[in-house]
Image 1: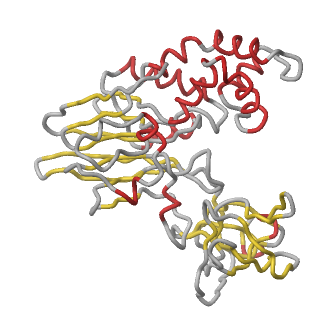
Image 2: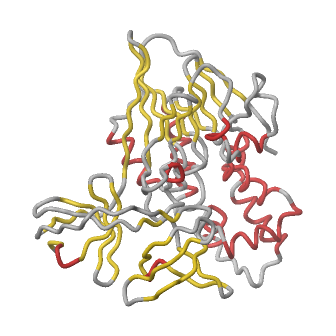
Image 3: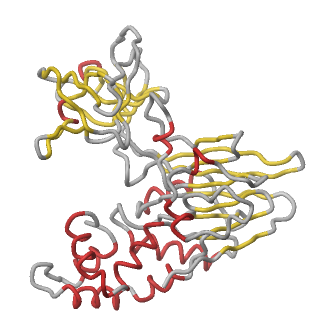
Length: 368
């Protein structure tokens, strides 16, 4: 059973600390970002929860974190809601049917699914309780590790916690769900006189009319949100918050890994700037006003925004229409010779990232 554990760390003198959150089993991204920031065992490294599920290397990620902790006592791994949920699904007998549902609908390629594949288990034939026991026995060491994780890590300069804390001085006096599942922390804030560093909610949720996965620094509320949406968002990145302390105080930097293919523009393309609209969580339901070959004119039901959505981003469920994920209706101007990142190519149009903006350009101007 997972219990609340708050840890404290007093860091003296100058130091460098790297904080990464919501890896979600994307081990290669994690290893790449550690390499790019030149991580060494002299650094403090904090993993701020949700390092499992929603990717394909859950077990391998756990083992790699254990390896890093064996190499350095300056590595701290914190609990997230995904670790908590995974432990409950596997260890609580009453949730055996829930585990089966999770496997079929949500947790494909996650830690449980890895064991099902390794053991050649048949979800249609196996008894749910028996299946749960096989998974539990197979992941005994990994589950023991998850149960050992602290909920928070407070240093003399900042507090790391997965989702947030309640706005009261005795913030430790709260249920576990508040620490790992809180959804209103960025809005409500806290009472501490130091920075609180969180993940849990992708930072793209906080940018009004742009798709941006960069770290959010709220200086007024002393909140730093670092979840770049890896494993959750269609457009995502893995962020590293780099904290450096010297005689002048604290300094913050960001480094990110976003593995998208790079193309070169072969022809100038210009469009007049217009008001940009964004479809974002949780307001994905839309009404189609006019359907054309490439884009459809749509209305976002909860916001009444009207925008053109690429047809490939629209799906129907129970006679209702939805946008697949965060979406922006921007069309971008680019110049010959410039390099851009391509999110995806859809018929005659490319969805790209250019100078930290997301938007559309025709594929005919891309150099293959």
